[in-house]
Length: 135
Image (cartoon, rainbow, N blue to C red; front, side, top):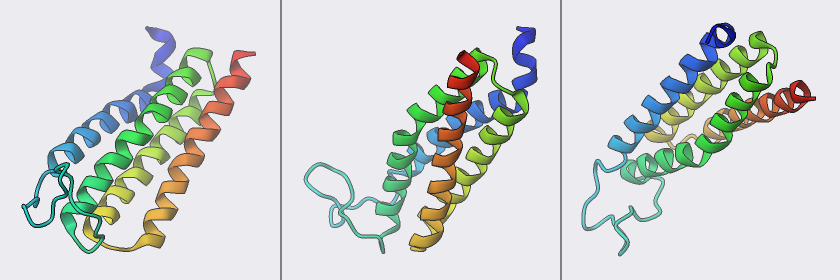
């Protein structure tokens, strides 16, 4: 397990990401009423409704989880630069925390998009580092 000690920030970021997704899951059901739900039980599309924004923040986190976890684990297993993997994992986590806060608390589409793109760039760069380290 010593080979993973250098990736402590990335490992902590993965664990904190799991906690954030669970927190978003719990928050995603708050504020649902019969009036603001579709037949499927999800909130109706309305960005002025905090219940809808909470649901979207959770679903967005779920959609991003697979690529983030896969790229980060691949980079660690392939032996990519621990410094870069740790930085990228930490930046990803911070960008997604900002995105969740902005998504749930505001209707600021521009800020939400910026934090989303930062997170995706972190995933892409981490995946590239993993591929390079694997060869």
